[in-house]
Image 1: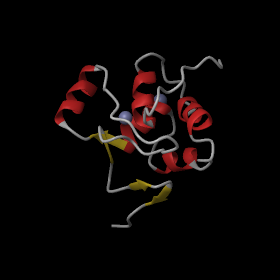
Image 2: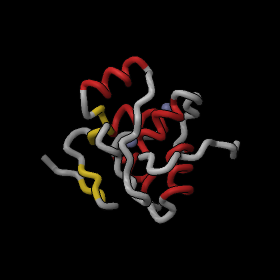
Image 3: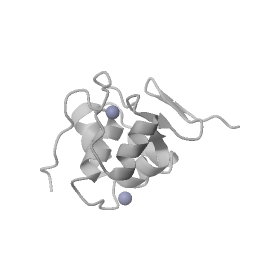
Length: 118
Ligand SMILES: [Zn+2]
Ligand SMILES: [Zn+2]
């Protein structure tokens, strides 16, 4: 299966995962994380390790465990399974757009990953 849809321009990783999750069953793998990385941010070689540290061991778990909706509106759309319009990120970024917030005080900025101990 190498015909996976591409991220659209400036679509962030999380919106991409959300969009793909609505079209494809999760295969208990990070195939869409990898596809996003390979097509968008090939230098982010640690991306899979990062999302696993956030509790994302497959594509749907990244959505469930690494982020939460940043607004009530986004949460409503998520609950309803409706489309969430990506607010966009600059090319080469692995950060979510401002529709999403990282969970648990995890910071995931500027290509650097660190976790607060508290
Ligand atoms: Zn899954
Ligand atoms: Zn987005």
